[in-house]
Image (cartoon, rainbow, N blue to C red; front, side, top):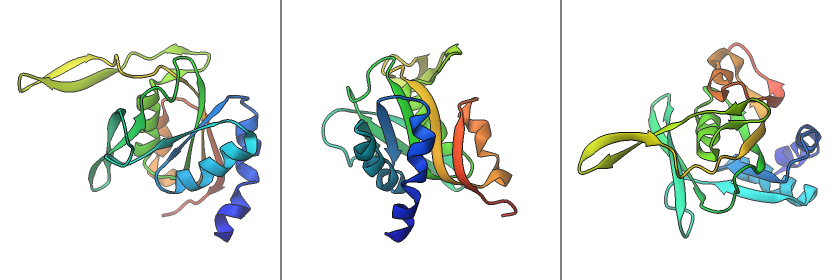
Length: 172
């Protein structure tokens, strides 16, 4: 893929500023950018995938799309509490996917303290609300994408986390 090869040299320059050990890439193109980047930087890579594609025990986070909802999953134990992480995807439009990644990682803002998150589940058929005990409480250093569509206001779903972009495409 010539496009991804041409983008790879640019993404490490954004991520190296933060000096953290892990990159987490979203299915599908975030995996294409994130895995080779992690190899080049000799750091951990965490795949964030659609439901049912990862073997073993996973945790998940649901998010809204323009046309419905979806869910991402990651293996339990692949990110430790307090570990620094960069989230990688190809595009930010509405910010739903990156926002779900932030919530899944536990959404601890670097240098700004913890966010209290509430998870929804069911107990005895009734919807319940409780603190997210299953979240890993990682530190999101930044989100890195190739393209931003700023007219769709996706940054608003990042809860103040830094966003590195290579291309901004307005007017869609």
